[in-house]
Image (cartoon, rainbow, N blue to C red; front, side, top):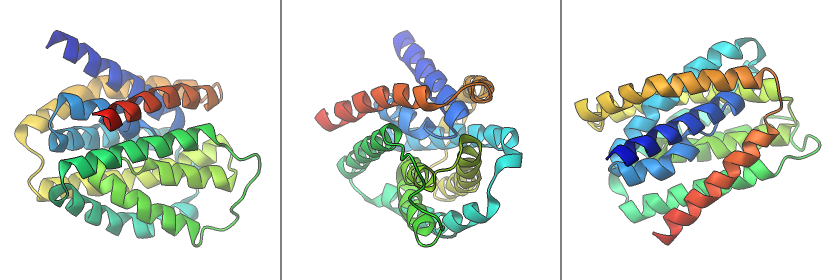
Length: 240
């Protein structure tokens, strides 16, 4: 049990740090091990709580760099798609959801490894709406809606502050809606609420450290480090 707690805190620390630096990655990094240590639905609730706390922290740190018009385009499709993803969480077999986790991790790896040298997308329509649709479904089902939004920021060719601001503006409303839907469908229990609350403090602390690092250096190295862990988690889930 002690070993599990150590692993859990380690994952929260790494995922929180990554989220603070890049504006994304907490769900991708943490879900792979959360589903090993907790039942799937409990893991989804815990990650949703922690992801919301970290998104609010990031919102404050990049509030002056958010491209609100661009963010409204992706939210237009992401918010209703989250409800569909939440339905899939309650109805699809566990094997399908685990497969979805592996797919999202692999997509996250590809997104982290590939950064275009110039902007390939110059207008939000229809690409921001498509990213919101796909991200909303996987976010509502698995807390892993980040990769489509991250890919969109890379294709837009934004500098890191604008890209992180866009991601934060996307994650805060979607995280709030996800927690509300989980509560309304009875998936939030006293037990997983306490577990999520207990992990929120270390997540916020490492998230804050990540925001401080973000202000000083490039995020490229941290994305590559996250990719190594993501690949390992994806392989583990696929083999299991």
